[in-house]
Image (tube, rainbow, N blue to C red; front, side, top):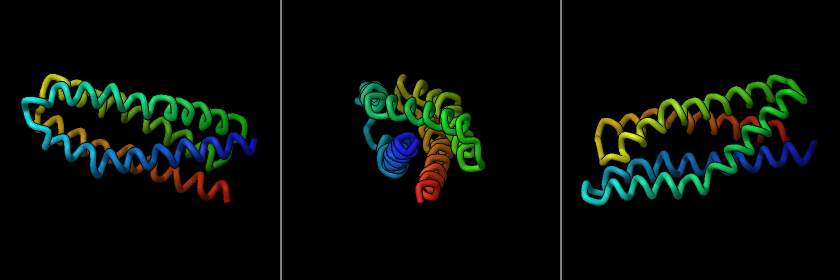
Length: 136
């Protein structure tokens, strides 16, 4: 079980770092790419980002659900709920904005992307605090 806790901590802390970088650096800089190159930039962004986040996100989902079922507690269930919030936010809020941006830069879609991404940023940050507390 110790391995499961450590694996969850690793993927959660990793994804928390990724999401803060995306929120503070990457997404805001999208507005500076320029109209001419934005469409190919957005397609490359989506493809390359998936290489970095798909496996850790899947691992985190599976580990969080496993812990919530195997060791139900306030921490494990809250952690699982936060993962569900992250996945729902990703596929219901951020992916649709990326779909709009894939056709070219649109200021309103970019603004919605940055604003709604705070949901994931906060949720992952709370998860990181939870796993930190849980391990200690």
